[in-house]
Image (cartoon, rainbow, N blue to C red):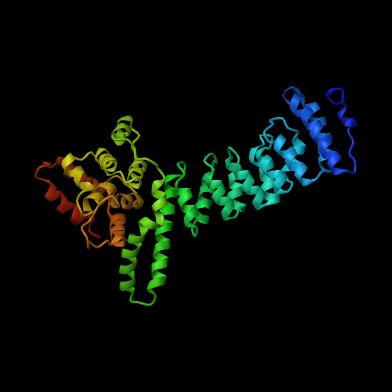
Length: 378
């Protein structure tokens, strides 16, 4: 196989000298030739450039290799062996290749991440897209800085185990919890895990602060303090959805048959009382007089009954409770409510809902609330 002609130059006649600057100039000239014709070159011609530039690149200084890397970073058919060597060079050289080169395969990126470590991993996180295979490695082997950079890449894709690992590693990192919670592709159950972690962290801090006191006093104080600190601890997570959905979003989803618990949870996270109330009404098929009271009445009994009849998780119930405005001084008793909710029989709750549907809305609210209170009592 002969070298590709380039202005009459036989590439294999290019030879290295002991002078790094002369070698760097030769690299520039040959790279100019390659870039000029790269779109028309056959694979065997690219292989010649790979061999020659690669040989010369090993004899030039880092700043010249960095210049070479910058010139080749965006070239789709850049010499593959040379690109892989530059990707494993010091970070000054490797960064443009790792962050931009389409020539690197997922396997190449994984090999570099495992072999070169933190700085090279961070450069990889800057790519326009990251596959699940690559993010799995970054999440498993990267430090917290790498995790933050990976999660902040909007075009990174994560596997289910990868998201599970991220949630686990965010346990003591509130900033990571926030950026992770802002990802629109984060599965709902993982978002709920994040919120539960944030609440647990608040509780642990309060227990440590309260110190040696009676169990009852500690429990009451932690209950109140955790609820009070909840908004601050996970406030960033509630920005996940961005602007509130447009009016009528729940009705449109219901008409398409796509309205689910996930939508209700998201309306609650976004603070959208109107859409959350509408969604509950549509899913439970309650008369308007009852539906309006689910999130308006201070007692939680009706809300618990409706949610249990729909088999909602406690996390969804709690998100909905945040939309309500109980009178000042109303005991929170979150732990007792959760216990009562989780022991409430779904079939029983559905019977109450059928009772409500059959009642005269103008006269049945009081009776319904009384029945809901009896059924929901822990």
